[in-house]
Length: 490
Image (cartoon, rainbow, N blue to C red; front, side):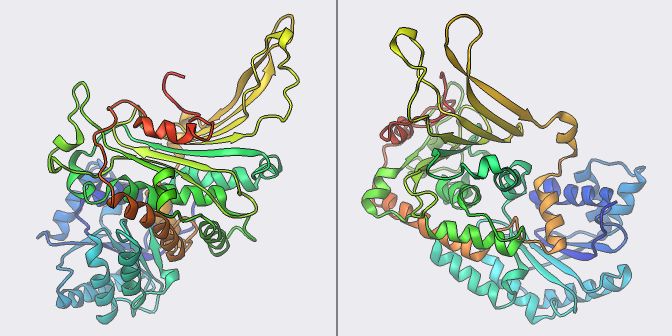
């Protein structure tokens, strides 16, 4: 049985899609596993007019359980509701009184987690009123969880962080990135720092390049209004990809704690080369999908302007100016309407300096590069490509794969990202959350790309649904005499 954690959860935006689809089912998993038992309570808030019973009925629907499920009913009995206007200070006094009441009822020791699933423009307002009205004066631990986006550039992110810092300390702020809750993302640290074989080769002397691909098969769907003001660069690169890259690039931390891990991630991001105008134009490309067989072009999607220059695809080359990675590029790409939905990391090692098997009389093909692939989703596992001899007379070589994939049973037992991150918040463990320093360096890098693109008029659309993006993405890596390890029709 897991260690029981005690806290009151207050969800701002508690009747939203994220809460019903991800957060409450994740909390129920924690309840079934024993992390949450008797000493927890939930207050959902939104502008909707609901009773406690009405809210509990909605939570039951989100769990997909019936009233005959006694375990689910006991869990749901800890849920309560308050209609709330986040801009009205008086409403926070009502919320405080309800929180104090539940604290006594469930013996919560004053521990409170405030989850802001709201538009970022309200973050500072909510944080300020929480402090002003005494909701953070309960003598327990107070933690603030914030959903992305955390700003839309460095200046807005800093302004937001400054507003939050007036009410909460940095170690109380948990900027959630659900990618950091994925099992295989956390496995990056295990593979690197738990294996001498891997970590001893994890540098520019042995690695030729590292490729990170986050591919989405669907288009913008109902997110068009948000997405057209964000784009792939802000929506995916600034947060998810930069977090993955920092885990791949960082030095080994002094200890496996959130403070030391974050410190090494920040050091890596500090050494990331921020491009000037010319280099940004050369090393980053963007794309926008056109029409396919039965797929509308991005500009024809609902709520998208017909002349939109918003990118739905990004590919880029990252360079670190430090001893470990100097000269070894990190190639990244992400986009919508691509060939399939998957996330993977391909670590391409350098070939032997001398290929002793490639002599003319043997007609042997040149040796392939060794490649370590980390499959993040949908399947989870690893693959290591090695060279081996073919069976039979003569001496021919061929690439083989050593594979490990998580089986179906273990997959079912793997915590969902939000379940894992809620658990970490209850523990006060910030390892898998982005610190302000990480966010700020990521924005500084991305802002430079954005500024260059804003000065140019792109030729959109430039790739078809079902491909792996525009031709420029292939040209980007081919200029360096390399190629994407995952590619169609290879």
